[in-house]
Image 1 (cartoon, helix red, strand yellow):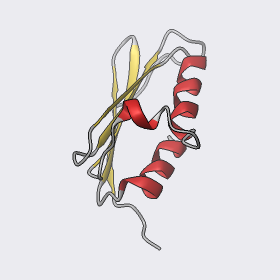
Image 2 (cartoon, one colour):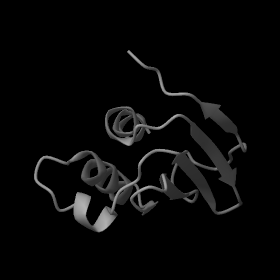
Image 3 (cartoon, one colour):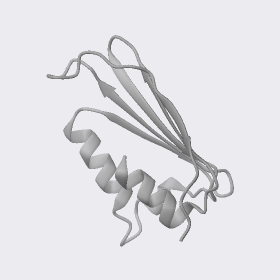
Image 4 (tube, one colour):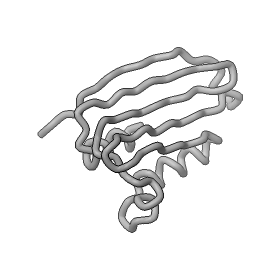
Length: 105
């Protein structure tokens, strides 16, 4: 999640960011949404020097999670992580949501 928020701060030019979790008996879903400039995911992940999304995807793979990016230029971005709860230590969760405004320097 830290990498996703760092990417939003560095690249998205977003005014609002929302975090939402949903939990079912079988999985925890985390949505990170921004209202930024958006991008074409098929192009960004192939560009040299853009390793943030690749790192998120790899960490999801390591824990058996599904990672989805929904974005397009001009329409913000949604990152969705779906984490199976059958893994050791992940047996229950609570639904949480939050809305954040990116800090400006």
